[in-house]
Image 1 (cartoon, rainbow, N blue to C red):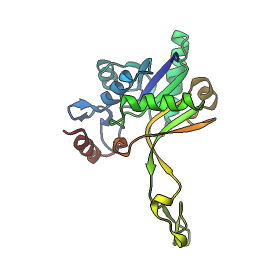
Image 2 (image 1 turned 180 degrees about the vertical axis):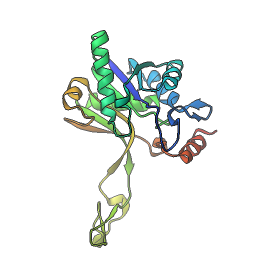
Image 3 (image 1 turned 60 degrees about the vertical axis):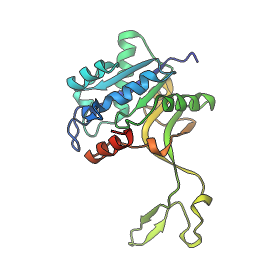
Image 4 (image 1 turned 120 degrees about the vertical axis):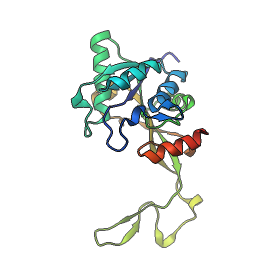
Length: 226
């Protein structure tokens, strides 16, 4: 494989749910170190950059083996889309280095159970299937419901009047928020992570923990064996 593949890990300083979440210790290491290490150990990734507005995150990211692009505060608020941080990194690299990768791997540092083989796997999924963008997801075998405006419950992915066995349902996938990959030129045109031919990379359920609350750290430590 001769593709130039850039992994970008957005990690802003503000976190209301868990203050300092992105660098909070998890099993003795800052949370963000897990994503940086996975990217650096992936066979297909050629460069890893953290996008942040926080100097402490920047310092820890550099010590963990990543480059850093500092982003302005207006791209780091609660309502700022992650795509804006990715575009800022790409624009900065284009301006300063005349550099543009073939593919971007967007890694969430809140998914510390992601392995290097997951990153290589989703890249292979995109390239093998000639896709334009791809996402990691877990196989999903559950019955979904919703409430109507009238207050009644109705099935979303099943007919409750002719309920099938779970194993007979169509295979569905739950987006796990861990990894996204896409072709760079098309991403800069669309300015969104999903476009063109989209493929799924099936990631084992046991690696699909997303850190949002303090109890998620405890669960992750149990899974990591700490």
